[in-house]
Amino acid sequence: MIATPEEGEPLPEYVLCAANLAPHRPPSSEQDHAPFYHRLPADLGGGAIGQVPFHLHGFACEPPLTNDIDDRAFSNAAFCQLEGVDGATYPIQKIVLDFYGYVRVDDDAGTPDREESPVSVTLESDPGGYDFSRDLDITVRRGSTGDLSRGIIIRGRPDVLLPAAAYVIRPQLGEDHLLLCDGLFDTTPPTPVAAFEYNFKLWSDCNRNGVDDETDITLDPVLDIWPMDGLIDECHPELCEPDYNGDGNVDQDDVDDLLACIGGDCSRVLPQANPDFNHDGNVDQDDVSALINRVAGNGCPA
Image (cartoon, rainbow, N blue to C red):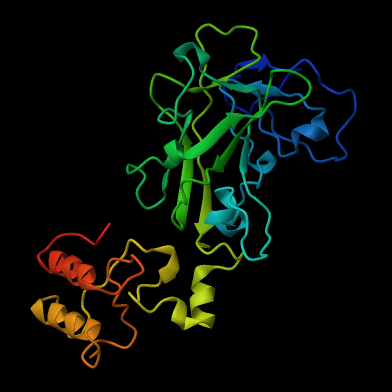
């Protein structure tokens, strides 16, 4: 097969990277500009002629890579493989990155652990920050036809609920556990896939009812009363609000007012305040001690 470059451009290097090209013609008269075609691999018979290094096939990804990130928005509960509770049901979500040619993870570096991933997953707002790939399950998708695969599957884990945010996936740029082109005639040296970016968004569903937490709070404001921070209180017992009298200061007055409330006089404590400061299920002197520790500049009770 020959692909003709644009006039004046050099002829690129092409490598036959699949042996199962179908004999049928795609049901379209539109001509693609090889090697980057818009048609799905299934329409081409499952094989392709691709330029090395292989690029991400945005339209073949699940969900497809479109201009609108909202097309790739999931609840953080569904993406982290958490089932609904109290009768709520919703589809469990994953991302599949699909490439123009077969890919594999660099197996010469040994089996990757949780800290080693062929891709990075960072916040769009902080691309150099924390890499959430260590909190995800990332595997090469294997089909029934053999070991060759076009895609990798990315899904969250139930033990880590990712925060609501916009994320971007990129290939790792280190030396180990790279995402490599596979199925090539010549594999020396190994060829990493071309640089790419795939973005997606998570919205918060911490109570796992299939509804955005912001919508839950709007419909039932009592879900976020102490502290009033835009988060559903029951999902964040680690947070604490020490300003019991609502005067804008965290000081001895709050300790005195909480102590009085435990003794039966809650007149100086905000009505929405929870006197169980340490969240142990009891309202007692331990809450006062925990509040004194917080007023002294230490953290919330564990």
